[in-house]
Image (tube, rainbow, N blue to C red; front, side, top):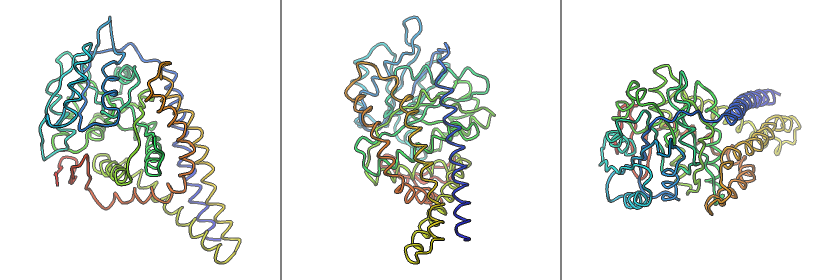
Length: 413
């Protein structure tokens, strides 16, 4: 009966932790979705670091340049594209898009290479030197973001609220092909999103984050980036060091193509965890605690299953039943969250949606069944992938291997 009691206790703790986090997120998102963006439209500079061609690259750039961030018929933003070199295939694609849209001021910066910091940050720092003197806020976005047409309005509006140091959206990976690695990444990413409703642990996401220029300078973000590999988590800790909060804006949740090979997705997951470990250790410890809890749960469930199969003792069956009560609750979370995320991601699709947007809608609808099927595999794999981050500080990012020695010391291996 000891194992039965232990497994009941572990399952109960897991249920309480997951239920509290999910309910907090659900209530937060429901409340935020009722809010309209304020009429706060300061002049802003949007910085977009690029390397290579992500799926839908040109379309994503056009969506950014066509943003409804306009006052008196004039765009209130500029976009600064930045690449490491003119040899990058993104350089030519950016140049073509810039020539096709002239309603927004754009710049294209070649940043070069710096072996003491991440290439993305090197690109961003080069772009920062080129921002307009009239810009009151800075927005950072990624090239794989499929942005709704009013994303900038929603992202910038809360910057005028007391106590807000930065605002952020978040990504939602949609596995178009629906293979197991891509589905697992989507599930892992959804669970991470639960932290966004928690003021203590909410963090900026580099794919869509905004900060007032004066706060950026006061928090000395550029200095913290000087020898870093990560942009968003180091910005998060710099802003929170001032006693300010990071505000999650659900309307800026963006769809991302979630397909990838097993190697790419393991590399991606490992990178996210190690970056969090180095730049935001409090959040990383939350992930480790959850992984330890679910690892013990998994071991106890597997042991109970094996013991019942070998002995036929009903005590082991009772233990197994106690442990498996976690699964129906997770199914409930998946189903309830599906409707919520669909409202956030797809409500803004126009009646004349592009073929890509229609495919996005179809792929999203398929994620629920795929995720349900993947729950057992997620329990078998994801906790151990999380715990692996304890062992190393090396990450691979867009073909470059980095050793993260500290938040202010990054070495290209």
